[in-house]
Amino acid sequence: MRKYILAGGSFALLAVVLGAFASHALKAHFSTEVLAFFQTGIRYMMYHGLVLLILSHLPLARNPLIFRLFFWGVVFFSFSIFVLCLGKLTPFDFSFMGPITPIGGSLLIAGWTVLLWKSFKEKTD
Image (cartoon, rainbow, N blue to C red; front, side):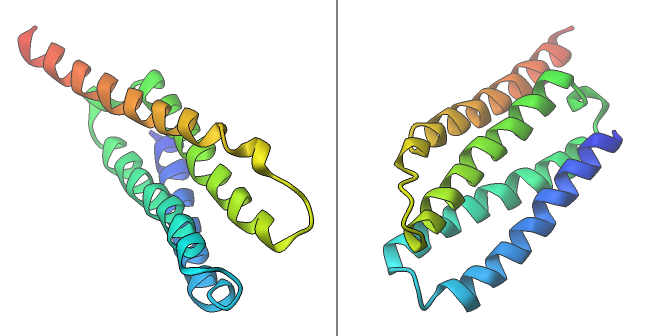
């Protein structure tokens, strides 16, 4: 339960900090399209941070597989977006990170699938 709260709270906190950073510091440096992409990473991080906090109170959902899928899904999805966007401010090419974003999205989808499966299985048992 503690790791759910720690990860969920950290993701939510970081989403707020990065949201403020994007709105104030990055707005002048990013195009509307890049800023929207960055905000997508923030939004998914916040959603799944809150989900982890909620799941910390549901015994059914406290499952190591669900936790790992959500945790690594957020890390791969959101952080690859942040690196890709922030990379536009540097001379380095971070395009190699592009394929990591859909891997993270797939992990998030898998996390939701396992959560729903566990919920369905619990009801039928």
